[in-house]
Amino acid sequence: MIFCSSVSISTPRGSPPPSPYPKAKPDFRLSLAFIYYNAILIYLSGTYDYHIHWDMLDAPILAKSVIKSHVKAIVEMTKSALESTNLAGILFLVPLRIAGARAQSVEQKGIIIE
Image 1: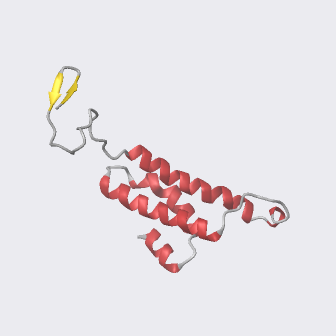
Image 2: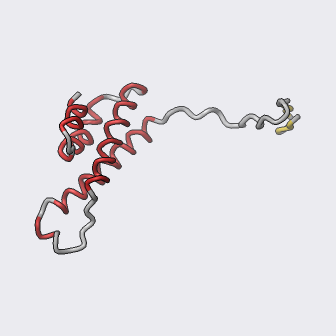
Image 3: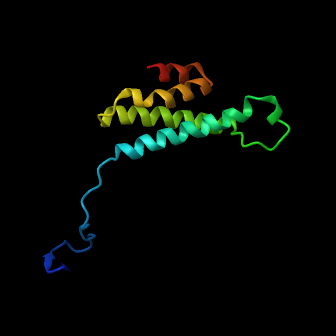
């Protein structure tokens, strides 16, 4: 038996006590922030790998595999957010535009267009 501020709760032996906090709901603001985070990383890297004069310096340019993983994250998180929240699709226009510009395969571009 567990006593929490004058309330006793019985739990089966070996099971963890119940959390005093309510269950966390998916936070749409956090999903949107992660989507924009991935898009901003791609965009900032693109400002350096687009111009030739940055090739001579140690510029913060992401590898193609890293960019591919960020594009994949944007697409997957956007799909999830559109299915599980009531956010307007226009909020995802900029991240999807950035991901589409840096998508490497026809398959990735097709998924983004959907």
